[in-house]
Amino acid sequence: MLYTSPALETVIERLSRLPTIGRKTAQRLALFLLKQPREDIMALADAIGTLQQKVRTCTICSNITEIDPCPICRDERRDRSIICVVEEPNDVMVIERTNEFKGLYHVLGGTLSPLDGIGPDQLKVHELLTRLRAEDGIPVHEIILAMDPNVEGEATTLYLAKLLSPIVERVTRIARGIPIGSDLEFADEATLARALEGRTTV
Image (cartoon, rainbow, N blue to C red; front, side, top):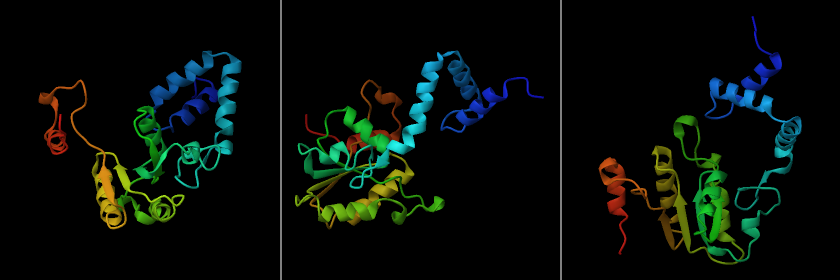
């Protein structure tokens, strides 16, 4: 027997389908929403409803956008000779928040994962190669590979490095090492090895 509202149960069930949201968290969120003013809930529902209508992917870099090409690709102040290759659109957001990178991006849409049937043809690899041949007439001098430091990310980095090295003057990867504010004694061997490998002159 169902002792709660069927409408509430429906919301809990829908929320629990979101990544990293279990049933308990979904229940807390649903109960929180229930306490909010009706106009706030309607505004949220409207925003979610129009999400897929307005948001699309940029035909150049595959980042999410409402206008095509996206604002980054259209920005003439960006350095068009450098392209940072990332896995997903949220990686672009993270890098942009640093205000350090002034080049362009290319979103692969995932990483190589043969066990899941994801090869180069399932990613935006061909589109990247096409861009290298025609980036507004400006030659691309450097490709920065910014993949997650896991098995799939490493495999994708090595694949792209081998593929791009004969085409592009410089293929680099983002440095990996000890985070600011942490202690060396708590770093694992692999992280410490990467930090030593990527050391720089002071």
